[in-house]
Image 1 (cartoon, rainbow, N blue to C red):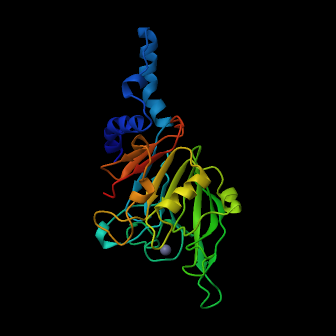
Image 2 (cartoon, rainbow, N blue to C red):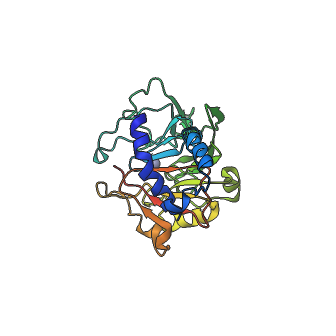
Image 3 (cartoon, protein in one colour):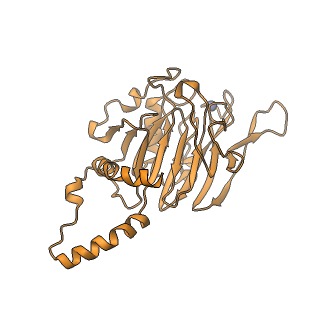
Length: 283
Ligand SMILES: [Zn+2]
C-alpha cells in the first residue's frame, strides 16, 4: 500500500500541479551549485514525509473517504447503492450527516466495529418526531470537527427533516461536507461554518439543492481552494440530476474532470485565484 502510494505520487503530483496551473517543469528547483543540489537531494525523502498530501476519494453520491497527511482515515456518508459496486474500505472515523439510508450504511467499512461513528443527527426522544440535531465539537486524532445544523429542505426540515454539515479542521485546512443540504444558508449558518478550503456540496436536486442553488451556496461560503459537486447522477446512477447545471457557464479552466476517484492536495499548495471545481470519477 505504502509502495503503491509512493509509486503513484509522481503522476498525481503532476496532476495536482496541473490543477493549480503550475508546470511540474517550472516547479523543479534549479540549483546552480552541485553541493547545494546534493543537500537538497538528501533532504527530499524527509521533506516528502513531512508534507504528505491529503487524499480524498469519492465513492458516488455523498460518500467520501479522506486520509489526512498524518494517515487518519475519515469516511463521510457511506452508502451501499448497488450501482456503485461493492466498496470495502477501512476507517478510523465515520461521519453521518443525517439518517437517510444512502448516507448511513456501514457495510462497506470492513473494520466498522473498531471505527468511531459520529452522527450529526440522533433519533428523537419523542416518537414520531424524526431526528434531533446532535451538536458535536470535539477532536479526533489530528482533526478538530464540529457539526452545524442545516435542513434537508427549504422549510426548516418540515418536508425531509434535518441535516448537518461536518466541518473538519485538519493539517491547516478546513474541509466541509454539506450532507443533503436543501436550502440556501442563513447568515448564522455561514458564520458557524466559517472559512472553507475544500467544499463538498450536493448539486443533484430532487432531494437537495440543485445546481443553480448550489452555485448560490458556493457564493455564500466562498471556498478558497477546491469544490467537489456531489449527490448527482452519474453513468451508473440516474436518480438525480446531472451536475451540468452547476457547471454551466463556468470557465472551462476552472473545471477538472478526472478519470479516477481520487484527488490529492496539500495545505502548502498555493491558493488559486478562484477555487477549482474537481469532478472525480466514482471508480
Ligand atoms: Zn437524505
